[in-house]
Image 1 (tube, helix red, strand yellow):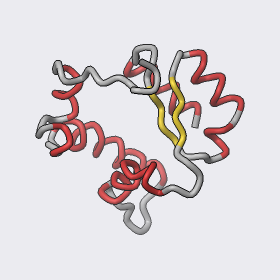
Image 2 (cartoon, helix red, strand yellow):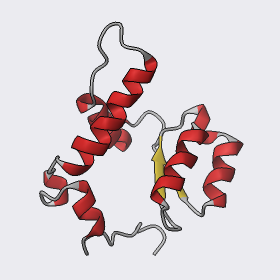
Image 3 (cartoon, one colour):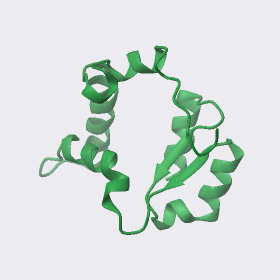
Image 4 (tube, one colour):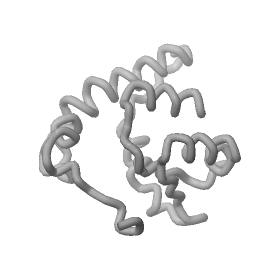
Length: 120
């Protein structure tokens, strides 16, 4: 899991203060994850135990992500998900929650100025 996080950090180069929201799974409550978050100056947010609404965005993603087909290899499944994210999810989809902007358009627009209310 940390390998994937560090690969994303190298590719996206996020600014200090990035909020990472996770559930309370063992990999996210580990000392290694805590140290990684701290080293990159990220803010770690966790859903409350037993509260499915805290993780609604991820559950929504799982609902629309590409479905694996029988006989598909793990490598092919990973490639399908990466292609889905890089091509459709970030560059073609226009969600109402982003005022019908594509994800990449939203990131570069002036609207990308949200701050966590707990820290400001």
